[in-house]
Length: 444
Image (cartoon, rainbow, N blue to C red; front, side, top):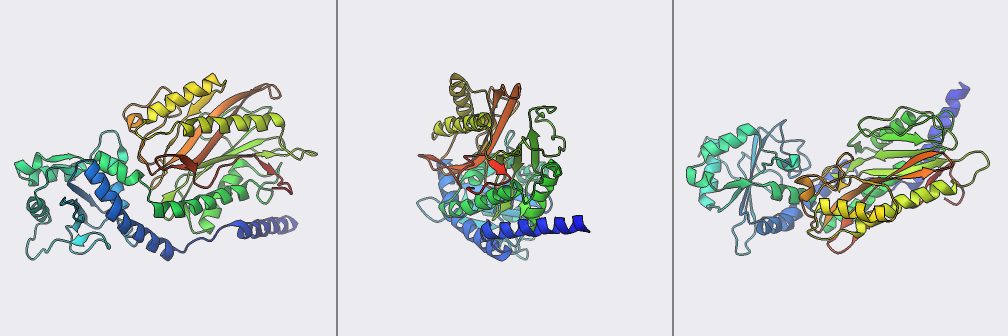
């Protein structure tokens, strides 16, 4: 009973701290209304721009319930949990500066964006109605979400693609092209309205980590890394949010511990004084995702700050992030960013590994891949995709440092989410500049 009372006290204490620092969380209704406003705005601004820049005058998306196209899922109204039956959406640019036409070959409107364009009493066959709409607008290029390399841009099923090509007359079938670039640019482009809210989304994620890396959650000598993992999961659920992947929490220490491989999960360890602990954690909120890796040091008795050698190692990791973000430029490929960063970092005596990626609607989002943990020489095709303005990225990487005090390497693993506006890179809600300390010091 005494143990249970102490545990309850710790939980209540953690909740009180969380309530005092956690920003307001929007209700589900508020989130839905916000996302619907964003969707309407994006079809007024983003879609016309990318269709014209990519030379596409008609975008056809076909999907169905339980096998949804990743792009279409981001275009559905907030009250739809998925596609209904066979869902056909068409965006048509009539040119000459006219507004985009957005149609649903369905029995009803699809939210406020796609207007119903099929009356089964007039034309019982949904596919023939789609062909009528295409023929009536006579597009020069008909884009469909089909891609060999980019999974998020490969949303049309094999059956639907074959059926579309069978239904289209030969002259129209010849105009069908891959919508790969449209799909990627739709997914990767962030609007000013979204970026206002993205800062708070990141703030929530940062605050959850701050809570987890504190004495309200961690009792050295008792708490395990898996305890912290499940605290993160439960805290997110308590806030009414979601995680998009199972978190990782691991430790590095001077003795009896080796670096885990990225091909598997770390073992559960009891957290001890002198440990460097690290987390990999992401949430989904307002339809946007976060992906964050931060670090904390567990103070030994008598210590009030982290050892200087760990502080210096952490700063070298921050320097590696700066090298990468300073190299961002419009049109520069992911592979160029990767190789330029590695080259510069190694000249400075760093030992880098880069595996950064876009983020937004998806955690591992659409856009240029900037290295993979097992592909540090470049990533074919996905790494060749260029940087566009108004895109968000997880700056994910690590730097190894040999510590004489430990007689082995420490790996400083970092990840923070930022935004490239076309001229400068900034972190959406800042980044962790100093190691967290457990227990927390009065100055923090």
